Image 1 (tube, rainbow, N blue to C red):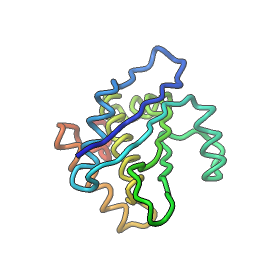
Image 2: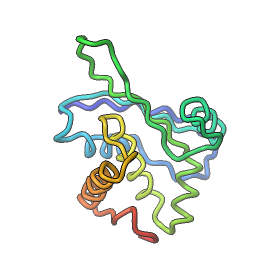
Image 3: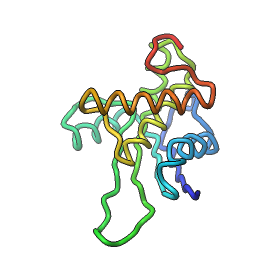
Length: 154
């Protein structure tokens, strides 16, 4: 298994608890193991203004959000390891963790795993797909001793 994770830290707020590059690598590897044998992902940590612009441009929602996933759709018939990009708003992740009364690091792990699963085709548009994706997220997080992220205050 070979997973390359490129981290771009475009965050000015030095008061935030940001994960290490090793944390990001670990969480991406956890999400991909058994689902992809190799892959390359870029994780860009962004400010709320960039998150809002991306969310507006690509989803028509004029507000910053926690994580945006941009799967790479390469040319047909040409094998490529590039899975796509994640744009994660550090301020939003921190704010949500505080509002949900959970450790910031736990919420980061959830957002990275959630976004990575989106890059490989998981989604939560309908109830059945949401249940499948959430069940997998809960199991992956439990494997690293992080409680169910869908339960408040854990």
